[in-house]
Image 1: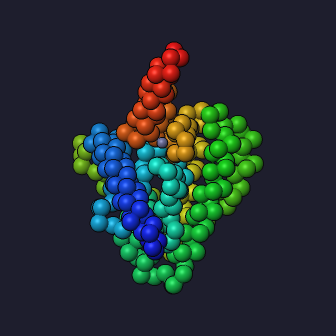
Image 2: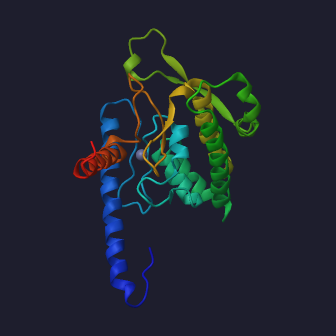
Image 3: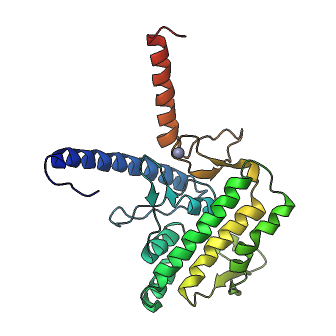
Length: 264
Ligand SMILES: [Zn+2]
């Protein structure tokens, strides 16, 4: 937020401080959400250090493709874009566990100026195309004729240069009679290969998730997307810590107002 000149300066600084503290509270809450998810061992959630100038992404969707759609969002009041540049894209992918820090380092070294930023623009375009697909189909089972809409995604997937490697099984399977397993890797020849893990996550969502349980947070203007994996399919918020509590407070205030005005 920029400072204005003259009389409004002080008021503006106060506003800036309040915005900053609101954001800090939000970050703290989201950090708790992330750590909680990591602690139960089910999520492969990574959390960037607070020293990174980029904001940590929200990995609350329970599906990486939706986390990617959530990389532009309005979690408090102001719209936030996580992927403004190529460096942002690399940071987001590392934080989401979709590329390793060594892949990031390799591409940072080999990319020519502007190349990574151009891929970030393609990633945003893919994101907005996929958002319209998800918005159209969420809440209902995916019909087979939806495949007609998937050409853009299939075109990206067709570029993949994945390959398999035989590696020893990890130690947990030490006693298993079979000692080796496949590991699938990808050649990261150029920055536009960064679209491939994103496209794979989108394909996973389409092929493996029940779209009936793909939902948007009900608190306006948040609209972060997620897969509802709760037993009773009752998840309504991106996170209870933020939107759930805010919605509860709002309905509590509305009830108090009704009581005060004598309407029950
Ligand atoms: Zn929300």
